[in-house]
Length: 81
View 1: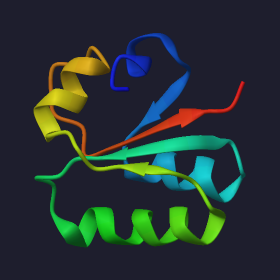
View 2: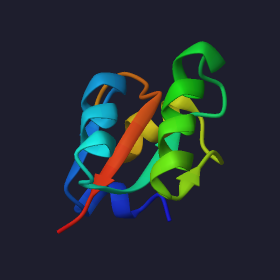
View 3: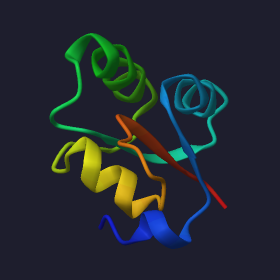
């Protein structure tokens, strides 16, 4: 599943991801399992309200590598086409 992050259109980071969720553009959200729950909790709640599936099986570094960035990513939202 994480392989879709390399090819799909996405936004990385809490602010951009929450905006995409709010605007109904996110189709799946990845939350790093080792990220601060104070950061990921509100995003998870937004996803639950909007009915967006959430993946929590990956670490900060795994998400960062999958997105081809040099730092970890706590939140990544895959966008609808």
